[in-house]
Image (tube, rainbow, N blue to C red; front, side, top):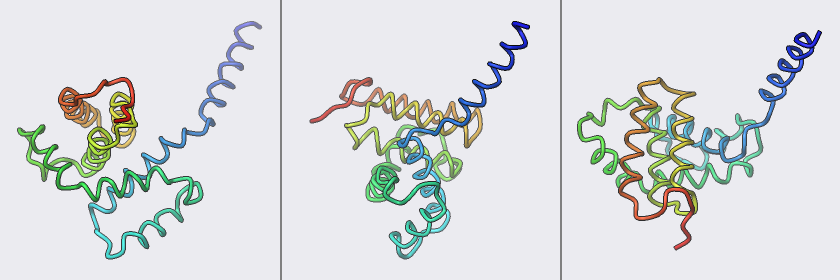
Length: 165
């Protein structure tokens, strides 16, 4: 009887845990990654209109994704510098052969690492690795981790805390 109750309780815990809503910043990073991927494939003429349509198909209202907007616009505005950093660090890789989803994840994470000092680097790296685990391959997870870890070593700020300067 004890193991039967334990099994039922265990199944309930798994069900309850799977129904837990993802944190807002995680959902925003997912939305950013998805948008950057689609933007990479097809650059729209009017990004604001394109984003309006994109958000119509998301789970939450547009305002919920303010952080995603910050990331999307930040990446696009700093794209050349971000891509140069990827090319510098991944010097043995042909940039054009990087999987598009991995490139979207890397661009978002590198933007955060270089320009969003309010986010601790380890948070950014862990989030990027988690996204690559879900949306890409095991090999890609290692590639993303390697690129971001090299960049983390180049930063002049603590890895585990935000910087406000």
